[in-house]
Figure 1 (cartoon, rainbow, N blue to C red):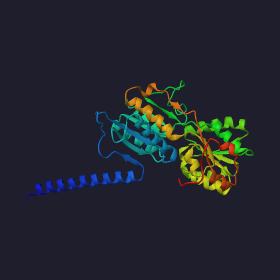
Figure 2: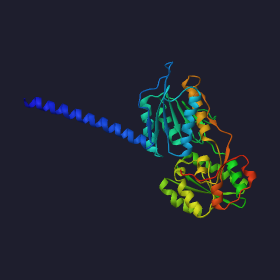
Figure 3: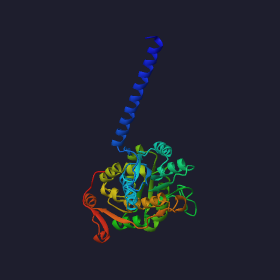
Figure 4: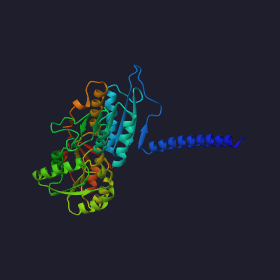
Length: 356
């Protein structure tokens, strides 16, 4: 066998081995990521219904925590109510950015390359990444858990979409929260709030709290952070100067909420949450919206777009006006706090503190 033939055979063998190794590595990495809760992608091809109509939706979630998880669950439920069901006529590619802005942008770019029928973006950083990536593609973006779409520049001054993008807002019921805190803590004067300085939603909410707090006899002590690594020291500083804490839906702070709760418990300082999951894991109470219902509404809006009944650019974003009251009796007992039963007549009450 001459040298040229031997060289050719060696080259072919090396190429086949390299390709096999790459395929194995890709499959393993995809499996590992999915098991870590970061990625969940359909493995069996595109779902097709009996009538042949099928859809593909890419879902990106900025961080892994209860309220955003509930949004995703509600989104799929809302679609299902409209006859668009995962595994039947709907294929989902789900990615979680793990509270990393760079990863959020990468996910958005990946989604555009897949050319889905629609992108669902959960939380403001993901919404902005996807809108910017999809701007000139014709792919509609539907967001949820965006507190202030106007501050995020997703809508114009008339509250209409700035492009092929629409969704739902999780604007906090600030007046209801301040009233709840005042009723439960009649002697309190200072409320601490931690927020991420780069989150436009949090900045807007802090401004609203500061504007309204004096009407309820409160002063807001706000503490800004840049990353989750700042939370322990920021919590120490904040807790040294407040009577209680009110937690926002700030993605970075919510991920560090267990740290804040542990430090607040040591000082016997009540922490008020902004939704049900925060109360379950140790906040005293909250006036907040139902994130599963928020997600359902978002799914219904997406279904209208998929069915051609409307376009994202024609649909104003929607805000939930109703809120629920949540209360954790186990936390009250731990704090040695008695709460008038009349304040809890319409509240959903929990009797234990659950792990996150």
